[in-house]
Image (tube, rainbow over all chains, first blue to last red; front, side, top):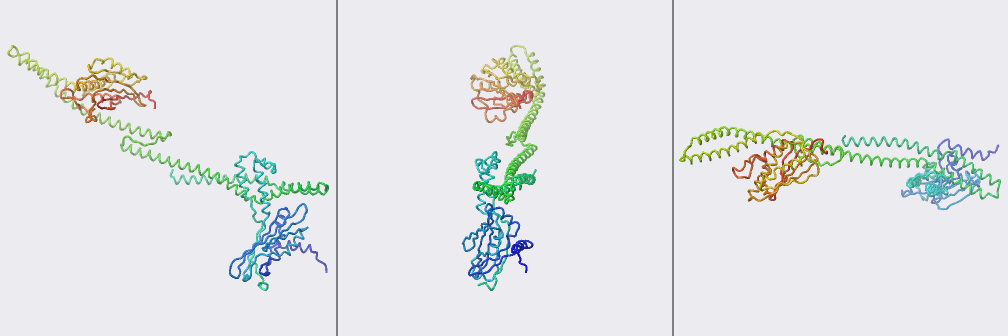
Length: 214
Length: 405
């Protein structure tokens, strides 16, 4: 029997998904926790792949909401930050789930990243006895981190201020002739307008398999 | 334009201006953004990233230097990407700011326009009401609009018109009343003159028939009757003079010069009166019948002299001064006599109104003087009167070429 090359399997896994809706993840109970497994093939999405290649930190945020046995809504979230280090050509991945522990790994290739993604298990919400009700899971892909956003804001602010000719270079020169009040308006405009709107958003209602639910 | 339609028009203008501005602004700021975020720029920067890496591979000893440049360039690319990601949001905010600023300016301008329009409408309404009142015959209107613009000037004209109409009405009423008195005087004079003349002739014939010493007393009685008839004749002559006041023959004279000549000519006419003429600042030309003006001045001085004589014959002074307004030139005649009693002050220009005893005057002087001034399109008014004296103003219309406004 001819051996199937793992790259082809990965390729099929990555590129088959975009043909339809994004395949939802699975959820299972582990102790008092609901754990997200078989994460959706997000890395196969063209936008995500392109975004990862920019070197900006792409954050994948999972948020969950479920009613516990008393009917009270319980919320939880997990986050995976992925940044491609362009100089070293490695993926720096930080995983923070609802347990509160941050796990950092460095992955040398996209394939290794895809494997890591596929095998990842994210503790999403602490919800004993979820009462068999569906878990609402929301996925958001944020294109850059808050630190990068602040750094960009600082750079723009410097560029737009008449005095800040140092780091901003030609950009500050372009607005040097503007009245200071105008620069301030632009500054405020950028400070308030630069946001981290989601690149992609998905929502699912997942059911905890009955056999594994406590 | 009503307030509602003004608001609708204003909102329409605001929407139209906002729409045009929005389209233009969108084109302009969008174009600037496209220019700043040209994909070629990002591509060139990304290529330079690869170049830095390649340079580091070829010159490992300068790796730190190339890496620092690499990271600086990468930060720049990241900033541009973040800007690109927020392009729509920034554009929307920017458009909002521009629209809000322009809208604010337009609203402020529109609000100011509406306020101005409201005030304008209110002023127009006041003018309309004033015109209604004017057409209804109301006199001495006070609109209270002192604006220097067209409406203010119109308001001033309406007020002036109402004052002129009031003056004309009073003048007409006075003249009408006076003409009745003149007609009465004319008839009385006519009815009295014929029997007076006949009686006088008969008495003179009777005097001629009375000869001898024994008839001397009868002759003296007839002489006394003739004197009384003469006095009656003089009264009749006054009636005639009043009834047949001539129309003035107008010529332009300097008011000051006429008054000065009068003061010089009549300096000794009233033994208990000193005439004084104040110096004038400049020529005051007025169209007048000089003789008739002189007659009016004589009447005023007569009154002053008689009033002073009634006070025990004390000496008095009549002072003539001059002045002008934007429509009239005038001379004021002021004496230091006992003044006009308050109870007849309002009727003093009516014929036969007098404070003198019966037989000392008929009370026609002021009426004749007033008639003279009215026939000059001017007026004779009492300025003030008290126990310290009386003052009369004789005003003449300013000649058109001399009018200041």
